[in-house]
Length: 475
Image 1 (cartoon, rainbow, N blue to C red):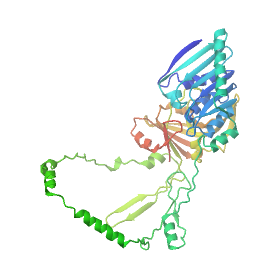
Image 2: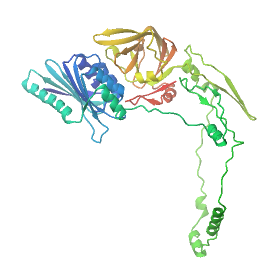
Image 3: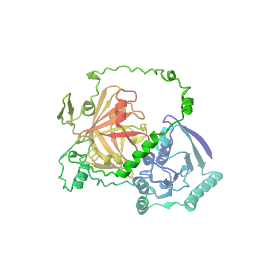
Image 4: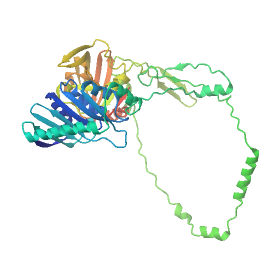
C-alpha cells in the first residue's frame, strides 16, 4: 500500500483532474461517496463519468437547497447504481471518496469539503491518494474491507436507491430543489379604486417597455383619479375630548423649584457650542467624453440595431430629453469565467450552463442545422457557427468561421468551441461578454480584472451561478 499526500495549489494537480484521469484509464469498477454535490462540481465530474464503460456506483447526499432534478437525472443516466441520503435531516451525511478498481491496483482519492468547482479545482488544499497493489495479499485484504464498508453504508444508513419515480417523489416532498411558481393576480391600485366606486374599470392601453430579453416584460400605465378619490374617516368626539383633557393634565404638572435648580445649576451652554468641522468635498468636474457609452459597448459590433425614440418631457424650468431603448431582440450574456480547463475536448471551450440557455431561449438555438457524432459510446451534438473573440487587454480581434456549439450527451452545459479562444489570455473571474450578432454568429469579449471596463460589467453580473461564487448577468 502506498499513501500520498497531494497538494492542490494555483489550479495545479487538482482533485478534479485526477478523478477525470482515473476514469479515462478505464477502471473495471468505480465506487464513490459524495456528501454534498453542487452543480459546479457535477460539471467537472461529468467530464469523467459520462461515456465511461466502468460499472459506477455512487452515494450522494441531497438537500432542498443545492440538489436539482437535473443533477440526479445525470447521475442516474450514467451510473449503474445511485443511492441518496437525506441531508435535510438533523444528522448530516459526510465524507468524500472515489475508489477506482483496475486489474492490478485499486486507487482511492479522499478529500474534504463540498464537491464544488472550488473544492475540485480552485481552492488551495491537501487530499490523499492511496494505492493498493492487488498482487500483495495484505493490500488485497485491505481493499476487501474497504469495499465491505461501502456496502455497510448502503445497508446501515438510511440511503434510498434512486429511480426516476423517486426523483419525482423527492421533488414533490421538497427534499430537493423545487422551482417556485407564482400566480401574479394582484390587482392594480386603479382597479381597486374603481371597485370601491362600483365603476367597471376600462382596459388600460399598454406601452411596451423592454428591460430584458422577454416578450412579457410590459409595464401597465395606471390611471389614478385623485380628484375624485375621497377617504371618509369617522372620529369619535368623546375620545377626542378625553385625549385633549389628558394632554392638559400633563402640561399642567408643576416641577418643584429646588429640583429644577439642582438639575440646571451645573449646565454650561459653552460646552455644547463647539463647532464640528465638516469634511470638505472635492469638486469633481465631468466632461462629455467621460460618459460611458453603453450602447456602443453592448451593440457596437452587432447587426442588431437599437430603436431610438426621443421622448421629450417639458417643464417650466427645464426640458429633459431621454431615449427609450427596445432590447426585445437583443441577446447578451455577461459572466465571470472559471479557471480554464487544460484537458482534452474541454480546452478552448467557454461553457454556458443549461439552465441559463433555458432562461435565454433565443440565445442558443440547438433545434436547427444540428448534427451528431459519436466518440466511443459518447454522443456529441454540434452546430457550426461563426465566432469571434476580442482581447480587450490587447485590443485584438480573432475570428473563426468554423467554430461550433457543442453539447456532450447528458452534460449539464453547452460549450462555445473555437481554436481562436487559445489566442486570448483567460484567467479565473475574467469577464466574458458574449453577444449574439446573428442567427449563427457570436462575438465574445474577454475583460481582464485590471481593465477599466471590468467594474462596469461586474455590476451587470447580479446573478450567482449554482454551486459557485461566480456571477453572471443577462442583457
